[in-house]
Amino acid sequence: MDISIIIVNYRGWKALDECLESIDAISSKTFSFEVIIVDNFSNDGQFPVFKQKYSKFTFIENSGNNGFSNGCNFGANIATGNHFLFLNPDTKLTIEALETLLQTAVSHPEIGILSCLQINENHVFYKQNNLFPALGRFFGISRSFFRKLNKTKLEKRFNDTDDLFYPDWVTGAVIFISREWFNKIKGWNEDYWLYFEDVDLCKKIADNGGIVAVTRKATIFHQHGGASRLNVKTKALTKTEVIISKHVYISNQFPTGIQLNFHSLLILGVLSEKIILSFLSLFLFFIPKLKVNRLMLKNLFIYYFNAIQKQTWISPRAMNYLKTKA
Image (cartoon, rainbow, N blue to C red):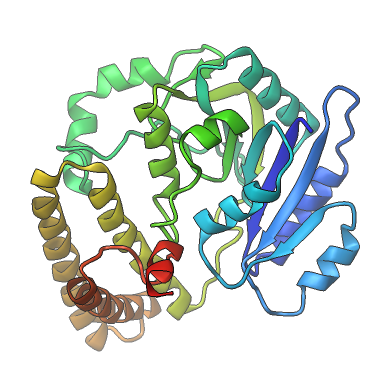
C-alpha cells in the first residue's frame, strides 16, 4: 500500500461525510491507498451508520476521547501504507493533491513532513509561515515584536515563488509523512490531548535532521472551524487545553534552566487576563463570550492544583497521563 489516509473524528460527522465523499471519488491506477477513520468514542449512534455507508473504508472506535495524538497513533498502528496522510475531517481531498504529496515526498526524502496549501470556504488561503516557539517569541507580544523586527527576512523566506517553502511547523490538518520518518520520531507525542501536538511533531523532525515543507503545487480545502463545537463549556475546555498544551510544550522542548521562568510567565499572564475578564463578565453578562473566561478560570485553577499535586504539566485528559494512573 502506498498511502494510508488517517482521519481522527470526534462528533464531526457532517464535515467527515463531505471529506469521505471527496476521498470516495478518488480513483488512481498509479498508486494505492487505504482510508482509516479513528472515532474517538463519539458515542452518539453515528459510528455504525458511517461504517455501513463507507464500507470500503476502515472504521475503528477508540476507547474514549483520548485526544488527537492518540487517535493518530492508533490509526498508524493498523495502517499498511508506506506513507501516512493525517487529515482533518473538515477537509476535502482531490486526486491531484494526493498525487502531488506522494510524488513530492518520494522525490525529496530529506522532507520529514510535507503539507500543501489550504483554502477555506471564503477562498482565503491559510497562512503557513509558522515559526517554532522560542525564547523571545513564545508569547503573543514578544512574537509580534520579533516578526516586526525580522519582517524583511521572513518575507524573503515565505514569499518566494518556489514550488516548496519551509516553515518551522505545519498544522496537523494536513500532514504527509513516510512510515520511515514516522517510526524514526516514534510517532505523535501523547503528552498532548489537543493542540501543539503538531508543533511538537515537526520539532522532532527538525531535531532528527529532517525538513518540514509545504508544496504550492497542491491545495486542499479546509473548512474554517468546520470540526469545532460552539457550546460554551466545550469552547472553555478547548481554550483551556491550548494553555495546558503550552505548558506541556515548554516541558518537552525547552532547556530545564528556563522552563520555570516560562511556566511562571504563562501562569501569571493567563490568570491575570482571565481574572479581569471574569470580573467584567459579572457586569457584562449580556456578552456570552465573556462567560467562557469564567469557566476557563475554574478549569485552570483545577489544572494548576493538579499539576502541583501530581508534579506533571501533562493534561489529565492526555493518554500519557492516564497511563501513569493505570
